Length: 251
Image (tube, rainbow, N blue to C red; front, side, top):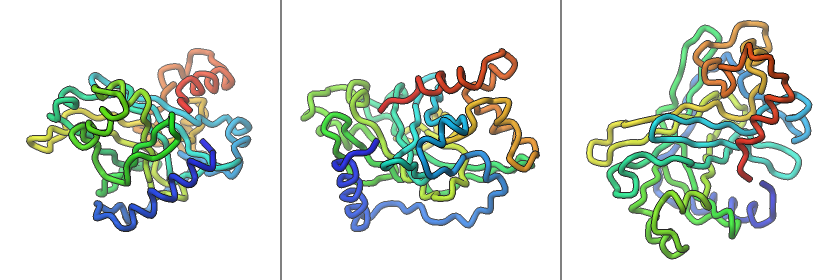
């Protein structure tokens, strides 16, 4: 997504965030030995040339989301990712549940690390091409229902058909592998459901993704999160996988 309005809107949100008292997401100090899960590239044309998935989709009972790599001009930014909620958790519209996002990584020996800080998010209106919130670390219908109603939406499903989310990963080097979207009970703050999806961009062919650039086997926990993991031996070509991943895009 690359327009002057978007850039100006993002800058405004960043400035607001600097003054807001929000939960931070600073450097975790984690050391990753798996730098090959996400491909850090400088040109949007490289995504096709390297057969990378620019978009992803993850779903489970009661929660689903799509991801799309964030671009500016002819380059991608690894520290930002678009998220579209396509299925909302039970109780979200009544205020009984809310959503937060997290990032985690895994290295070749299977060790995983979850960043202890929730990923900051901001809501973006795809029709006006403007951000409609500043950064926050949770999404609650009670906080945005009045805004949604002023836009003509009385229910969250319709609202999130138009409004998407920008997640600030604070990960310029693309070290983190996975975005976790978690629904929590408002009364207990305990997780009730979650989904884990590979962050774009990653090798779109699941067979190729199974091996890191070093030649070592990629952590099995990451391999199994590949959207086409179940198609590894199906005979699909890389071009077909690219077309399938493109269907997950939403901008």
